[in-house]
Length: 361
Image 1 (cartoon, rainbow, N blue to C red):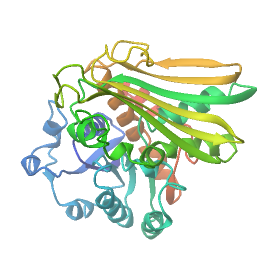
Image 2: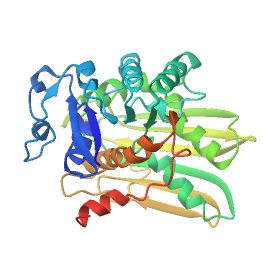
Image 3: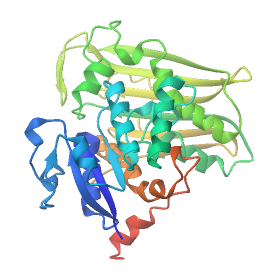
């Protein structure tokens, strides 16, 4: 029997995730919730960019959608700029009896030690009340810096250091709130956005560092953060909008987990809006962008991940990877015991349902 799914939000991640929910025979789309009034009443197939009519019309009423009693909710609403509202949404969904897989808020990937107990406890209480579980993930933070390092390190006799990198050109990424509000592109150098305020990098990516440490069986003594900004040599336009001359056009930041006085876990991001900026910073393994996992140990590894897609460029492919990780986790999350779940709690997902769909099974 297909799992009945409620889908929330049709932005960059949500639209791709929704298309899989509609097309994947493991799932039945029970409802769709949107925040944009212009999308209300439109068919889910149209909003997913598919040539299909589902008969499911978008609504702005979350409570009415939950009354349909979905087995699981795919939550893709933006959480980074509306944390309190997103947490409130999730409490309502979980308490209603619907499990959740989510792309945000990012701290819920592994909130312990990042969010205060007063923010975690209501989510855990809602899970107990509804008999439900929640799994938040993505690409980065997400499987690139938790699932993949664990898989590679499982072949090592000794591990001394793990570095996970994203090296990408975001010129074609049209998420203006992320580009301008959260990451601060286009602002004067030194006019820091929310992401570079003290503690924010550690909060956003520290979830992955703490999960890595937990999975490897040790605790971090400290998490440090540092960043650099590079101005645009002249004005230019990107998909998200205009970058003035002198405005930030490239950033590099690192979040590092320290144990026993050594930097043992590192997440390193190089984000450009033009490929020619800061040639001394790390370069991707393919044009546009790639991910990299480097393990120092015995043996040592450098693994480059180069996502591509028939439906878009490297940015689309990366978003699709995060969306696929969320949707493919639905069966395991529905089967999991109540509570906040991480990759350390769920069985290894072989994407068995994806192959079954492709083979007509």
